[in-house]
Image (cartoon, rainbow, N blue to C red):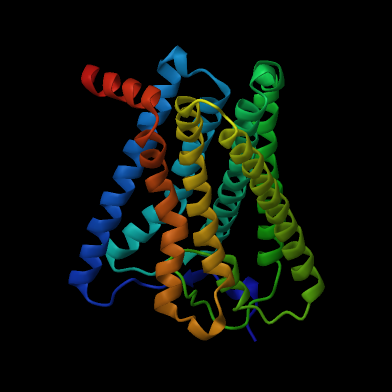
Length: 306
């Protein structure tokens, strides 16, 4: 019976069998990837170059753009290469690296979105204390905590997953190395270790989710009490992009992992995983720039001068 030491590579799930469809998928992935690079790259340049955007909200947005770039670069280039060269293989070490980076970046992004909800809460509910509560030191510490929590979760999940013996072949029913699909290849009876890692991740996600919900309950209560319609509009214009990004992130991830087994199929799993791993990093720059006049003005200047 083979174990993990005898598995030198994994076979990823292909998006299509015919050569024409593979090339079509490559072109589609390339377009999405380039748009994500352009969108997030413009946000990074705008925040870095315009001193008016050197505020806590844009500092966290800068971190989000970095995470989005890393997240989409972890999965999509390999999928593009496989589609272009008609190859499904990924090495054992490459698969482990992909799992680590994906979990790290996704976990850090979720934690950062929680921090960004707190930033909006302080800005709207306690505006007089905004500068003292969210100083440069506090912002750096919160961003570091988001990245650090993602790193710790990734170390735990990756070490737990790849320490299990594999005896169900090496075919991964996904277009990238995903932990649930790799666990299907395991023949281990050590459920306690798997449950422990799962409880840690679920607990972290639940705490962040509750914090985001409570923050927005307080935010909406404060906004609805504002006497000025212009003030309400300005408050909503800074909150709605973040709320849209959070909703997109959570809804796609929840559907991917909590959908009923009765509706699960390889093709549906492939589409859903594509939605939660690729769609948010590609759409986040668009969502944040649509209603943000300061960011739009800076982006226009960057495009004109370049």
